[in-house]
Amino acid sequence: MSYCPGLYFDIGKKARDVLYKDFSHQPKTNETNYQGCDWSFDISCKIQDIIPGLSALVGLVIPHSGKVELQYMQDYFGVTGGIGLKTEPIGVFSPILNFSGVVGTSLFSFGTGFSFDLGTREFDKFDTGLSFTNDLLISSLTLDKLDTLKASCYYTVNPLTKTAIAAELKHSFSTSDTSFSVGAQHALMPLTVLKAKVDTHGKVAAMIQQGLWDKLFLSIGGKIDFMDQRRIPNIGLSMAIKV
Image (cartoon, rainbow, N blue to C red; front, side, top):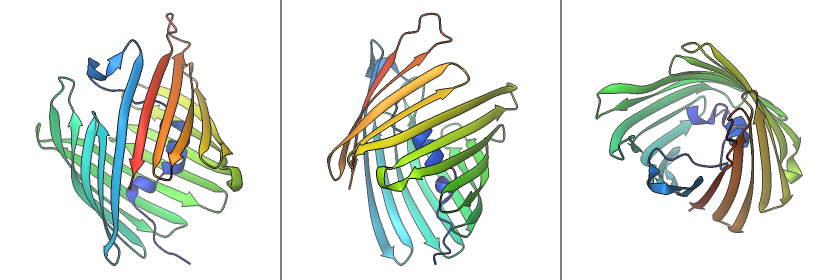
């Protein structure tokens, strides 16, 4: 039995993947947005076991961000540290230092993570969270930027078809805004995955991801905000390469 709790990023990851991953990327500049269509390329490379427990990760989302990260995992703890780049509203990349740590087991874990913006010399985020996992249900509670409280759960319906349901309750203390999101995913074929979600703010989204080869994935997603009088659908296209 493994006693490794994973990394802080793993807390709530299953639910986030169902509710947010690959639907569409939202660039902060207009350079990659044309008439409501967003595009991006996601490239990642992970080198496992440089020494026992130590891995290196390089990730690049063109044209939004990139990062280089070291990850170290052993029984009862996992830590990460690295540097990344994020796009500012004016289109300039800003360097970000990242660090996170988590303690616990594969059943229960608690951790924290923070990012420091070298450009502004301010903390970009400071998060903390905990997770409980069993064979079917994964639940988590996180506090993002010491302002947004999120409670999420992920339930496996059928592992053979990757059928799962996820839900998230989110509350912002600064704006007193509360929202609830629910989503589902299902694999029509081993390399073809459908996902859909809806939230209490009137936003509905759906996407289909097709694996072209073992390491290459193409995703097409769309979403619409029914609370917006214009109700203009947003279409997103993304490609992910994992090596």
